[in-house]
Image 1 (tube, rainbow, N blue to C red):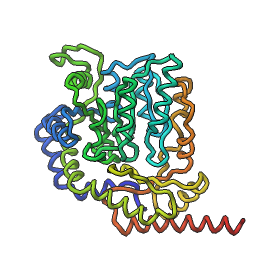
Image 2 (image 1 turned 180 degrees about the vertical axis):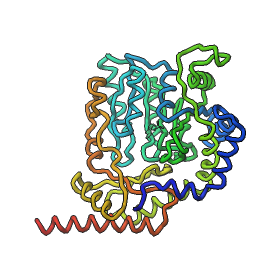
Image 3 (image 1 turned 90 degrees about the vertical axis):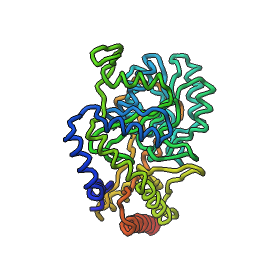
Image 4 (image 1 turned 30 degrees about the horizontal axis):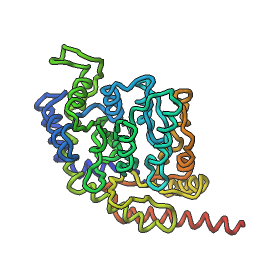
Length: 386
Ligand SMILES: Cc1ncc(COP(=O)(O)O)c(C=O)c1O
């Protein structure tokens, strides 16, 4: 079986350092908000290039906490891409606000700035909701089009919350993912570009006031002491053990993992670019390759390919089979902007291939070969049948 993301090999490679880091936490006994949490926050903030990093229990809470701190509530509209993981819009509904789903660009899979502006204008015209926030997602590791999104946010006086759950390590020029917008978040879910061994997340910001509020929100809205509560918050902290693991993994991520996934992506693209639509990285952009996602001609071809690869022991995943706007959970909760056709089409045609920094070159070439022979076989079968 060729795994989709090989976390076992990563652990074996880093085992001595990770075991030592965990043992140190056990010896020191500071399981909640131990020194490793604070050290990690400093290193992460420095790496990303922002003033503050506030770690928390997961990437969903990270988004939620920012919306809570900004007092986003019923009557507010928050613009989110229609093609993303559920959590991006779930948090909007959780604070009582209304997610407005916006179509994505079919080359980058990220929110389409032209359609974003159209959705904002439509929301303003209808007058039912007050437009407050845009949550662009760095889908599959590629930063969203922040230069365009920033202009729109400024024009309509909206806040930007970068959902960098999949984007940690990406860049536009020298600007790193998780440094865009007034606040940005990431997830340390094990399969993410930088993952821990359980759940974890972080928020990044240059705003001192917001950082202070977030530190309060993650500990039950604490004030000057733990038993002084000045607002309603959550219990959402990153465990010290997870922080210690992340300290080791961040170093490997910076030293070679990020470069390695980019080499693998190049290998895939070279092998597959004439067979299927391979991911497009715009000039000046750098991806952290949370996923390597190809586009097939139609749903049938995609499903046949996935079945064929499965038979050959190659694990693949469809991210995502359904637009968020069509999820039952959002029925009646939102109102839809006109055009979400690209998302629907992508849901039918995408397939993500195994991608992780420990994949061997031969294995990637083997997967590339399996994809191209399956496509060629299915095409000639159809030609024969006329
Ligand atoms: C785009 C996006 N946003 C948010 C999240 C939520 O992160 P977590 O699973 O850590 O809560 C994820 C995780 O899958 C994600 O992919």
